[in-house]
Length: 332
Length: 263
Ligand SMILES: Cc1cc2nc3c(=O)[nH]c(=O)nc-3n(C[C@H](O)[C@H](O)[C@H](O)COP(=O)(O)OP(=O)(O)OC[C@H]3O[C@@H](n4cnc5c(N)ncnc54)[C@H](O)[C@@H]3O)c2cc1C
Ligand SMILES: Nc1ncnc2c1ncn2[C@@H]1O[C@H](COP(=O)(O)O)[C@@H](O)[C@H]1O
Image (cartoon, rainbow over all chains, first blue to last red; front, side, top):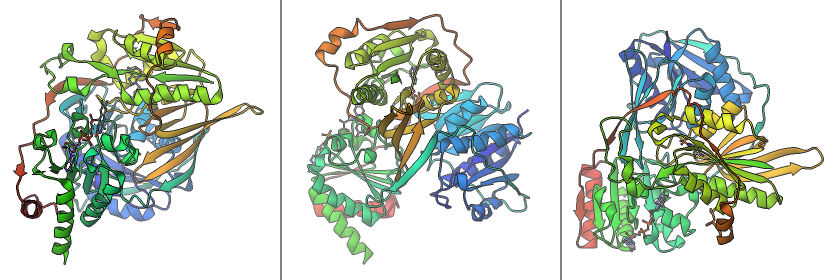
């Protein structure tokens, strides 16, 4: 008999980034009320005591804190070792283990599932649990145009799922429930073979498109790398980041990590502005779940208009400078 | 240096735009699908070849789990420069029984009998985007993994015979540089390399390279079942703004502010 649902939160540099942590806890709250199972929250890192306070009011039975120098930077071998030792050594067997579908979550998830012998479901957009505690998840396949429903097979143990950011409702505060805080011992695995040498923060390029609230992307219609200056300016005004189509990346105009689409990143910002991008299915695959899509293209027949909430038929070199001007005027 | 690349086929996106979905397994009419090598797996094949070239030797074996069509993909990898291929055959009718746990287990059962220093996989298969098989395979073989790698340097110290890799991977807003003792599994991401087209002499030689067919493999029980596919509801058609640029731009900003409330 499974006993609970386990949430693994992610912090970086002693901070919770974005809302995805609360979204995963929100999903746990819901699965917990549907199934009657309680839930716990696992927190790993170094000097993260201060963060436990932020997790206390969400109705968890227990908060497990592994605070240690060896958890300061993410290392898959160390993190999975600490998690699996605690989980398999505990008398509470989780039916489901939930993580955010971030780079780290998607690194831990499959490894932990494989170690515990459970199922792994990546990047869920909806999650349910049935009377036998089996997870039923919905996720996007075939370039984001088809929703697949997958279900865990019995027994309902250690079903690991990662949850797509910006998709689940945030957790609600629950007062009056007692939440225990338990310290978990963190030990390095016996055969540690990977060492983190360095983290290089890409400051000059600003925010990561996968986390930005607004993404302004440019394609081959931008004509040259220098012309991205206007997109940088627009993105800056909107508090966003600059993405690109593969057309622009393959031309060498933009870095590979800014590519949106099937072989790039999947983004779901509140606002996505596609400038000089035709809207090939491989590009749409990476941005179709954005809340609001704006397309600026001089070809009225461009497929990007089929998914755009607002389509501007026109020359981007005329439209974007006016948008920048308009935004500046509104700010004043 | 023994290198293994795990590769699979995926349907081209163009052929899945109007897939015929069905109410029962396998839920999609496969007859209209066209296949290509998973783009991330092409990075894996290419990287394997480049490591051989840089070190001036070594052997690259490509391994695939899947139905018959995989042969063409394996042949293509041999033509690019792989030295041998292993095909773990699974009938088309059984291909819906392959979750990442099953595929990783099958790959493990074949790979563990061979010699390996480096195992390369794609970051994810672009059709199902699980991004799991490489990492699960690493776990089953008891190896470390580095996922979503955009740069990989291999170092062989001939005196001590230690082999290690320095890998760069992307995380949100930063790059991690990791050092890892081999053997290990790496999953390949865009940016790692530019896959080559098979050169003509390579195509000629491909058919004569060793090709092992494994047909009698037992499929373990999957941890997950696919229970349905449905089309994503279309986004509702939006507003098209045409005409005077100044007016159109002002209207756009107004709509984003008042209607969509995103700025
Ligand atoms: C396996 C595979 C994977 C792929 N993965 C991806 C992926 O991850 N991401 C991705 O983006 N693509 C991907 N592609 C490529 C995709 O099919 C397209 O080729 C690519 O998206 C085209 O880029 P683009 O829209 O910038 O260029 P184009 O298709 O050339 O479009 C340029 C657009 O700019 C417009 N334009 C030109 N000048 C102006 C102007 N002055 N003002 C306004 N508009 C203007 C034109 O009307 C045109 O619509 C993939 C392809 C394959 C086969
Ligand atoms: N059937 C398969 N045969 C060989 N390799 C596979 C297979 N399925 C997945 N892989 C490898 O695992 C990676 C991740 O796949 P996935 O977990 O399905 O996203 C792929 O890019 C391949 O390198």
